[in-house]
Structures are given as structure tokens and as C-alpha cells.
Image 1 (cartoon, rainbow, N blue to C red):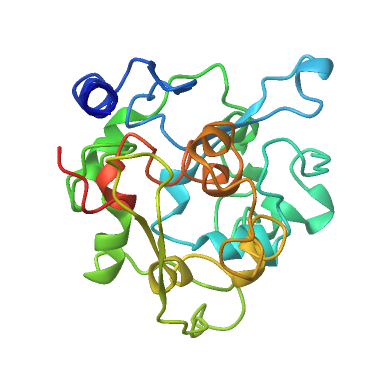
Image 2 (tube, one colour):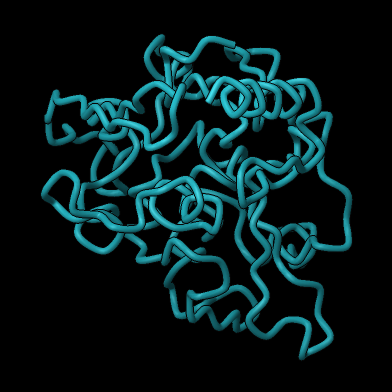
Length: 259
């Protein structure tokens, strides 16, 4: 038992020290981390490549200071999985749906401006990330060790960012308040319980984004809530692999781990 425990701790330390690499833990591997400026980037390519057009790369870090997740994934009806949104570009007009709700030249840049077409601003998969813009944002916000290396929750709590919760009115609305933290016992010996604070997630998400499709309402009834399945992109892995802080940041979920 002690050897197994030491092996697990060693693997966790390797992930912490070398976040860009992929290391085995048990029967699965934690995915390698991306560069901070690329973490959270989502490729949208339902038809662009087929039409010989550069696909769209959606950078979450560009939008997070301005809008909560619920604006796009509830109000604008973007699915949580990449390339599942039935977007038809129509030269950026999109029938005034999806991206075009904001990218209309008023809230954000539109398909065209006085300088000409803005196609390449969205169809940007062949371009390098704007690291200077990212680093300028990063310098203004609290830091973390993983993902974008930005502590978005702390930035929100300290009022350093004020993302809109809705596109209606002044963009403000009160989230549903469920001040309840779930404690989820780990199945591995030597690994402390995971905690899920509802109030932290409510600042960004709508309840319907998690329940009931990703998690059952009743505690301990979500059968795919295991690390092996989370690594596959299920349960917590829907967000905490590519957008929210990654699984390398063990202590954010297992705060009593000793490492």
C-alpha cells in the first residue's frame, strides 16, 4: 500500500514540475498542457476546411473578462463541445445568431468595417496567437500556475473583471445562490476528498449547463464521475481539460492533498 501511495505522489509531482508533458497515473494519462496564451482556444471547423477557408479559433481568454460562460452557452445556445454549433457564416452575418449577436459592429467588431472585411480576425487558425495582448491582460490579473496562468475566480472576486451575465439591459443579473459545497470522497487510497463549491461556479455558469446532462441532481448518482472518465472529457472534464483550470492543478479540487 505504501509503495502505491508513493507512486501516486511521484506521478503528481512529475505533472506539477513538467506540466507540458503527459504522464501516466494508474491506467490513464493527464493530457499535456498548452502554452498559457493558447489554453482555452477552441477550433471551430464544421465546414471551413471543406470550403478551403481557414477555420476559426475561439480564444476564451479574450472573452472571459467581458462575458460569463452562460452568455454564450445558454443565451446564445452554443453547445459545450467544439464544432457542434450549426454555424453558417454567410460572410459573418450568421442570420444574426451565435457570434453575430455580438460581432455586429456595435458590441464587438462586425464582418466589415471602414477598413474592409474582418474575416481574418475570426478565421485565424493560420495565424499565431496574439501573445502581446495576452501578456498585457495577464499582467493585470492574479496569477496561477496552470492553464492560462490566470486565477479567473480571484480576478472576479476582487472586481478586477466584471463580465456580463446577460446581453439584456445593462448586462447584470443575480446568479441563483446555492451556497453549498459538496465533499466527494476519492476512490484512491491516500488522495483527499474533492470539493465542489456551487457558489464559485454560479458566478460563471447557469445551473442548466451542468444539470442534468452532465451531472445528476442527486449527489453520488453521476456514474461517470471518476478520474478516468474526467480525463476522457466527461463530467468535470467537460470544462476542466481545455477551458477552466486543468487537472494538473490538483489542489484546487483536492485542497487537502499533501504535495
